[in-house]
Length: 146
Image: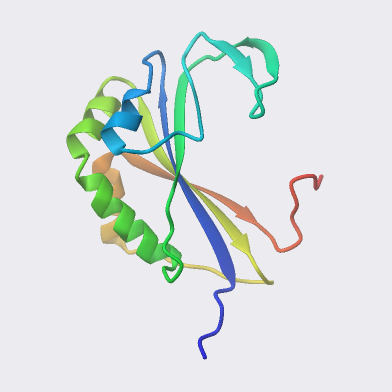
């Protein structure tokens, strides 16, 4: 019997732009955003509560599907292949002043775990203009921890 992975992970795609409405990301990528806003709109919390001020940039994010049997490296390879089919769109976004990132939440199930990424995979994300952002969570972390 195969041992369970010592970690879980979630991956979201994030677009930012200093002024452009990013609704076009939904049409291009066939994804529904979990959160989005447009530069200059009134700021709100993730639950829709009004906040002071306006958004200083446009933002669009959507979670990406993870296959149950995939480890983090395999997921990142598959996602890079899929995003490669949108290379012209990604380049246009970056060329207009926007940024793109994969947000990766890495949740440890025990004391220690790790992974490594092949240079060719990192080079592929670099060529697509996509940053990799990692948030690491220990087994005892909780959203309300200090």
